[in-house]
Amino acid sequence: MEDTASQRPRIYTAPRTDVSQNQGKFRIHLDFPGRAVPDHDDHGYGPLATVVESFMDPGTLIRMHQHRNEEIISWVPEGVMRHDDRQGNELVTDPDHLMVMNAGSGFWHAEETLADDPPLRMLQIFVRPHSLNLDPDIQHEPIPDPTPNEWRHLFGPKGTDAPLYVRNEVDLYDCRLDAGATTTLPARAGRDTYLYVFEGAVDVGDQSVGFTESALVTGDGDVAVTASEDSILVAFVIDPEAPVTRQGTIGR
Image (cartoon, rainbow, N blue to C red):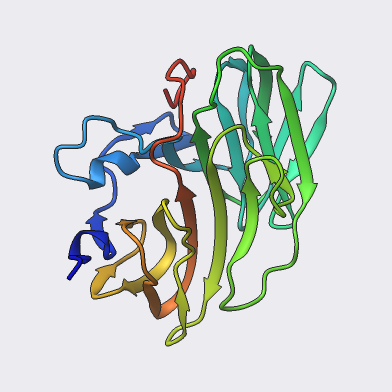
């Protein structure tokens, strides 16, 4: 009889990151998905380099700066993040829009909140591209309205049904999960899933995962996610064997 134990889902949980930077009106916590796995020799996990919880107070300006060789996704569940760049774009990312900066060979941009904007807490997600020095680009698109207790597909490789793309094998989903509700973690054969709890607390299989904590699920099979309180979740479906580059400005 074939032993399928090694193929069953395995859940690695991790507490909130202890890696942070405080620049006054701009503060970040850097979450490293690879650190969830014991003896894993990479802070990232395949193409997902890092997930950064970012705070910007009203009236904050992050001056023009360059990124290279990484895909940077700005996910804003509340508030607004204002972007301008050397290509002449002036964009507002908010709960109705998602932004993907395909930095490639180099992309200059600035970020800002105005004095009358609300305090901003968002995720900035760094994906390693499959190749170096790709053509730079920026995507800023409306996203579908969320449906309570259902996953919403936000980005994936080119050719998926997501409204935006990244240049490697990782997909992003989010979900507003009501207290007491259960959903199935997004999954795909041969891929692993990394879950981050932006708000609330959930049970992932038989593991509890709280506010700003995370879980990496490996192996095949459905895994239930049940909210113990109203929760906002993001999940990344990752090909851990995808070719990656490691020369990004931040994520590497």
